[in-house]
Image (tube, rainbow, N blue to C red; front, side, top):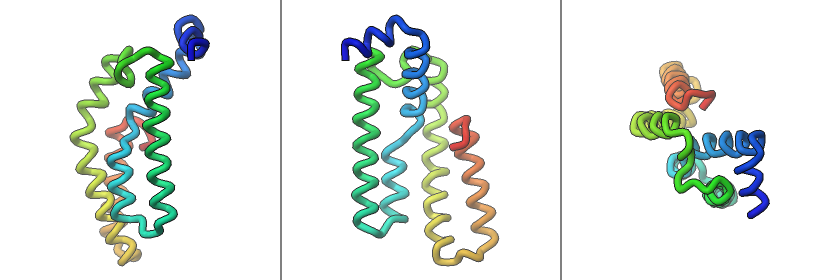
Length: 133
């Protein structure tokens, strides 16, 4: 860990890489992922995989923070942190709506209005995250 912390402090390329990882982790939301899983996943093995992935997400975030020395993800990019925090309350309801649309589409895959609504939520989430979502 000491070597990684020294690399972060003294090697701009490594610092940039860690900062990008922090940004991705700051945008990831295990709670929202669990919402999708709870409603859309029936297979117990797939549910265990989801739990494992959420644990890995938390483990990765904890270790990245140790490397960077930050208390919070994107701490050294305050504007980005502020933007992520501001968008989150708007993204959560769109994700919940998307989960419900996906649930309904599974029962009625030919429903054009649901397909259209799904595309709208996908675009909304991507726009809110400022990337492909």
